Amino acid sequence: MDLRTLRDIPELSGKKVFIRVDFNVPLDDDGNVRDAKRIRHAIPTIKYLLENGASQIILASHLGRPKNNESHLMTNKVAERLSELIGEDVAKIDDWGENGLPEAKIVMLENIRFHPAEKSKDEAERDEFGKQIASLADIYVNEAFSNSHRAHASMTSVPKYIPGYAGLGVEDEVNKISRAIESPEHPVVAVIGGLKADKLTAIHNLMGIADKILIAGAVSYNLRKIQGYNVGSSKVDDEGMEEIADIVQEVINSDKVELPTDAVVADDFSESANIKTVSIDGIEDGWMALDIGPETVEKYIAEIKNAKTVLWFGPIGVFEMEPFAGGTKAIGQAIADSDSVSIVGGGDSASAVKKLGLEEKITLVSTGGGASLKMIEGKELPALIILKK
Picture (cartoon, one colour):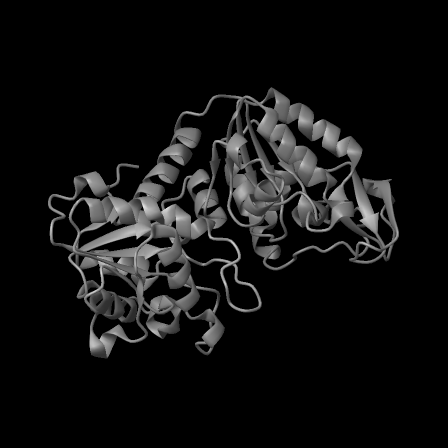
């Protein structure tokens, strides 16, 4: 994807730059930033712009999913953490609409989703809000790859009114993912876990790219249930399954697709539950599958060892609970130890990689699971289309 990048900006000196960042970071009970990785991710772009003469940096991000502009989702603590990390004062403002911007070099706006037009389904309403944001700056920069599959005002409307460019982080992620899907080295192995049934559409699309697709997590038990197996109390997502019945059958019948043949099951969603390993046809009523079993782990690792490109989206099991973390640990370690080009989608997969201390051994731990999966499916992201040369 040939995007306009920071190096394509004709003149930065004296310009005000609006950067749409993704500072949707986890917070502790006191509202303090628990993990600043996403904030650190944007710092090279901020520094590049300042070092090349930008007069002011204006930052905006969403934080959580506000319903009534909850105070704990304000960006005050995020601005404080950025200030500590970058070594510069960051002015946080609540209402830029009436009072305008302060003279500060770096300004953090309030949670962009506090404004209802940000996610409005009405494009005209989003564009009107985007026009207001654009009036604050001369240049737009997208440094929120993880949100680039969404047509929100701060993602797709602002660059309609001022020139838009991809930040350094967005450029890096897009380039690495593009290389992995446009000219991958085979065999290509995709590992798909997680819960949501919409992953089945992604799996179907990946059948055109991957040589093997290893399915785990709740989505695998969804497929086993459709095949007629008893999955007991295992969590499955049936929403929208009727609409994709044809796709589901193609996935189940594909010789590229591998499903778990055994599982670690429990009689309660708890670390203190009774736990045992059973074959996939041995899950009893009242028991739930919370991880893949050792036979499946061995089979999946063999495929990963043979791979030259590995794409991993979604956790293998309930890795947050130690008794059900074995599959995720084993698969994550196998990917890290392989010689493959490895791309891990954001969200829970990225959290698992971090928890296991494997980040340095992965080619790309993407900031956005949904966005990277859409790209790998071959779909264009609306917030990147508008930044094309």
